[in-house]
Image (cartoon, rainbow, N blue to C red):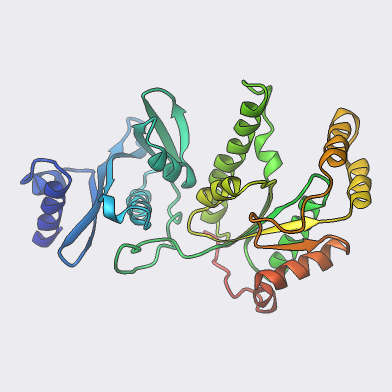
Length: 340
């Protein structure tokens, strides 16, 4: 901690409304941890908190405050600060982080959940716990300006389409091609992230609950996969609206995302449903298919559409070409990050 660091921290205290002049005393306290986002003379964000030792000799982080100036929000500043705070704590030996925020602070809650925060309490204020990994933010790259510290880009394919079109099968095939080329890849069926019930609410509210569960659980699962070295994610997900797409994008912030719609003719979808499902579940899927027919070949949700009328391996290759990822398959291990 140099004198210049204290001056910058004191300026941040002044910018964000605290009483100035106590920066050095705070920074000299054992366990104190703080980061400031600045460019030239401008201070536009800060976070501070404590690295705490527990009676069982383990340690944890407590994030007390994270603030970004209004005109610099939605530029990755808060995410960069939080990454820096978590990384420093993990390197110091902390295994978990705890914070609280207002229940109505949707922007903050979206950020925390996208980084793997697990909701611990509900009320006027809500609490989040995070698991920390020493390498969890190893991909943060040095930079300058408001984007400083954002994580390096990972690649995500979200495969959508009607039930029975083959999303999970094709996702497995895409993941297999990438892993065979030496790329650390995670494959997720989002339906498996919402095996929960009975729902507390019936009707549309219950459906929205399951949609939200898939997104927040995907964010948590991806955080763990990424910490283990994954740089590719292939996920099967039903994404029917632009709002749903944006929610998935929020849960995977910082990733290069392609949404792919799989389509097939009605008879093919019916045959696949009958091979896969039975009983009331099959009846519901067939009834939905009869009422609405196959999905349109083009909507505002997907980036491109692929017809699933060949072998899974062939369809997977076609998707990789359309997504511009085939070069990754043809250059084995080019983006591989060694696991910890």
